[in-house]
Image 1 (cartoon, rainbow, N blue to C red):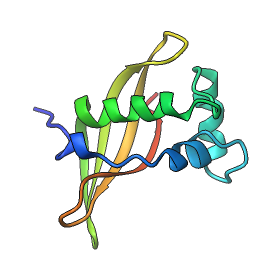
Image 2 (tube, rainbow, N blue to C red):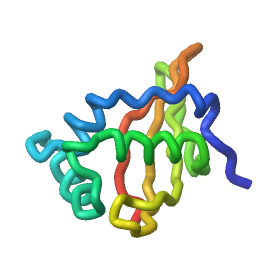
Image 3 (cartoon, one colour):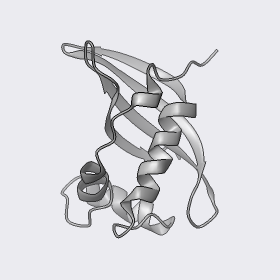
Image 4 (cartoon, one colour):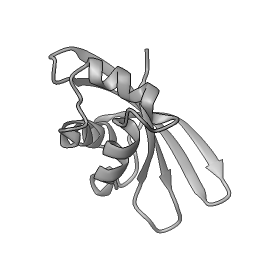
Length: 112
């Protein structure tokens, strides 16, 4: 049975990471994700919309994988959200929990 992300209510999702990575047309890695997110109504001018969707993933998503790393544990969380365009999307988010700290967003991408 799937479980949720530990301490999800305190998840750290820096708005700068959303705007400058996931929604950036110029970031070397993020620009490919930005194109997909933009197609579904998540715009760099409104990063709070994606931020809120990511928070929803943290709080209501299912942990589908855990990965032990030297500095903590990574959690892969999958959750379906409604995009600004009204389409249901399944997002896969990755979080890191370092010893004694709340979960912090590493990345997000489509699960399709």
